[in-house]
Length: 386
Ligand SMILES: [Mg+2]
Image 1 (tube, rainbow, N blue to C red):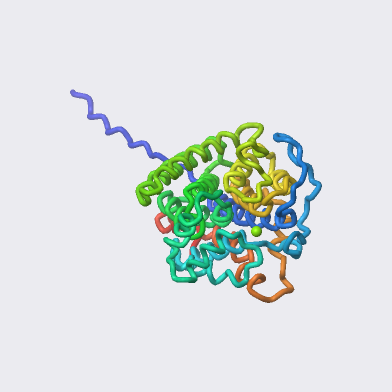
Image 2: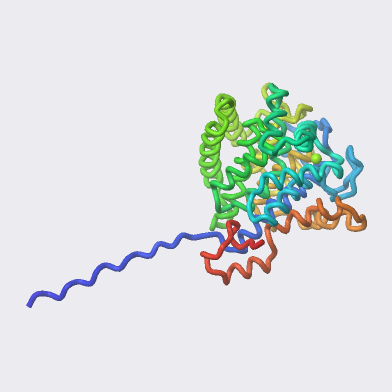
């Protein structure tokens, strides 16, 4: 008798490991709280030219707490333009469940009358918006009219909500990062810098491991940067050379940020440069990510070096906070920024307060609900429901 036919081989099931809803929540909140904490810590030291040890020695904790004051005489824990604009962006993403350029630009202009700390580039571009330019043209017009000039760092400091909202959606993350930067900072260095910040946040959020490795982060940065540079060149052929140069400069920043000395005290980039170039802020933030042993020491190093300390610390805080999650941020600093201005009614204590920024990442209840929700019903943010 012939042997019975062999049963067909069983198909191997392939399981793709994903971050848990709790991990996603912790890292999303880490990015947003890290931004606000960095801004509040750094605002005290904005514009100071502190003496600091040469890299890779970290600055000690000469200034180590939320004390407020600084050039704007702030209350301890109070934030400035970086967090306020990020809050506007986060609120718009949450409300529209997508990146809405027109609406976001409109909300940025509504913030201006309440602003006490706003850089010249943002102010000028938002003034063009008020005069009737669209969000697609305001930053470009200003950049074309004033170049060559250093690329400012402020769009990098507000961009983190895009990385949190679109952590699973690479095309929309890249598109929104560039569109949002271009409202005020059209310079290709700024647009591509925002793409890098959000690539780090995304890779940190979706890692199924305890923490994304440096290699995970670098792979996501290179993937997003290559796509973004090609897209920017296609959509603005007149700036294709500047885009190509910007991508190469940013790759150089990435390379130097991994070295022991990131060369931030000249001759090319200078940490105390009053022009506030974004490549200084980005290279310093990346250096902290690759070298500082924890969030607290990263922040203390940034603020104790002075310079554009609030913007530098907001950017470093967003990417380091996403990487280590909320639990990696000292609770006294989280409580300090979330509890600031409680006794003062008004827009700065309500509309533009970091308590609204953090809402984008959700709450532990959202994470629990997502654990019981089938994957197909997930929003672009995973567990985060509008
Ligand atoms: Mg500021």
